[in-house]
Length: 587
Image 1 (spheres, rainbow, N blue to C red):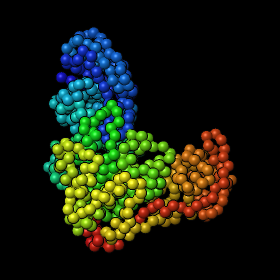
Image 2: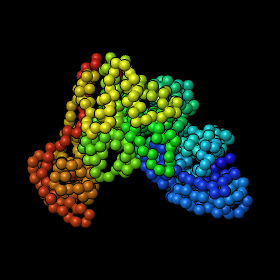
Image 3: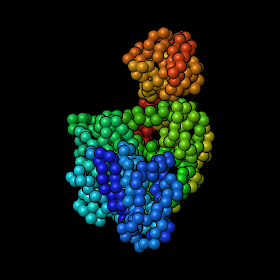
Image 4: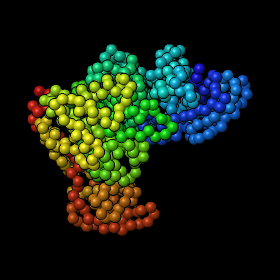
């Protein structure tokens, strides 16, 4: 038996204590901790948070040697050995572990050492209450062996892969349950909030019903939305029967709020995204992830599919499920279009390259990212949109992308076969009467924009481009500035700190670079308080002097203002008859 005893031992010091008990260890038994967590493609070196690791058997110390950054070797002939250590938990995100006097959260990729060679064995995890917070509740998707629901107790996982796929949330939790498609779901909230949980559960139920109906069945027997509520924050990570979420307080609809505002729509989209992953990446997954190689990067060029398809459906299914209107959906879609089209990244990198290099270029973006990379999330979502529209047109609206996703899941996900790089292309080729594989192949490997304007026109939409309010926005404005800086910036009383500079635009042509801080334009100070009025006073072609600091050196540069880039997309329904079920408008 492999057993873990976990205790939040020091809330102020942010420390979990872990006791790992191993029966019948090998004479030179190795232990290891993952370097990354599935769903977040970056080497995170969780082992660096382990403190004071030691081992004993029969009351005597056991020799233990660290043989790599995340691997240790025990030397013992005893029948049972106990390994003790602490884990520092101060990462308020969905990827690692967090602990203070208000709440605790952990993924077992951060806390539970694997016993090398025995990863396929069942294991138990006992979670003990901290002495300073005995009243805390516990929420997880891990099957329970002992203890009352939402209390401390013992849990069981069928193997190590399952163990690390059940996150835990604890604290003064608000827990609401609802049924969707006959399956129990739970909404769990930690942190101070003013949420109308009944309204949220009703909307989540519609999301869940819509997705289960789409695939025909669910790959879980229950599901939990583990949600940490903070002042500012956003994130989600999928798991086999739960998701870990981080959201801002303003994103949760309150009792006195009416309708679906942008913040709440974003939260629902996040929930929809992570729930969709239950099928698309948790069960249907690339062959390269079967099994996960958690000590090193696992490369695949298919993330455009697993994140891109999910990113298309997360917004679209809010509309298909009757939660948001066609106009609300199109507004979000227009922002996705602008996000991809604003920079030159899609002309420098294909979505398959973006997928393959997720470990470095996407998850470790620098200030040049808008000029050099494309998001496999956003561009992948637009490829999914294109496929959906083309399939509908070529099949006289009888075949949709949802049908393709269902077939892929039943043939390659439910069966555990996994997908090769050409699986989606081959599935599309298997449908008679449609010819989209060549289109998809070109879009996956060629660095170019998508022909979306003509496709959207065929569905009765009018597509226009307009100018955003400023360089930091992708939303259309009624009174945009007549010139643009051609750079994202952070404005403060100390000036404008350039975050990224678009190639061949105003700031770039003047010789400005990311991290430069503009302090004056035309010999007058520029700050967060007056930047809008400064930009409003100039016209394209005018020349000004800019003073900026690069590190501690003062630069004096000539800058010639240019017209704003029409980065915003506006999508308007002009002929509802052509929507043909893709979108539904109120009569």
